Image (cartoon, rainbow, N blue to C red):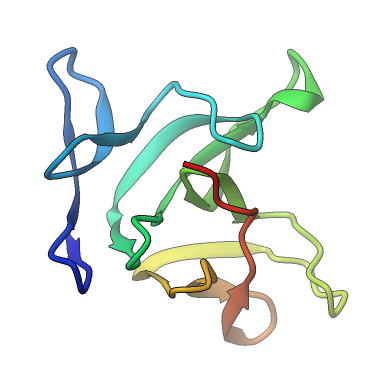
Length: 138
């Protein structure tokens, strides 16, 4: 659960159809099974990773994502996401050339006013990594 400067609260829960979702007190922001802004399919929301919200209502969370562009053979991978799409996923090659081998939900997730999300990741050694997310569009 998180609250931004305007009093908007973000939290995880389940809707009336028993589907896990990220909510604010006003609406469901994103639900499992939905396609995000970057065409990624949200397979699962990981409740253990927490949720974050910035002043613009952008919500960041941990979950499993499926890249729809891969086609029918696509598999779900652990990722940090916003409603706009994948911020980073296991297997990504970061700008410095490192491969993101593990995303840990133990450290939670954060998002700033620029839409940059932060989480604990395993590269080699354990680093705190900031990765710019896709552009936000409500």
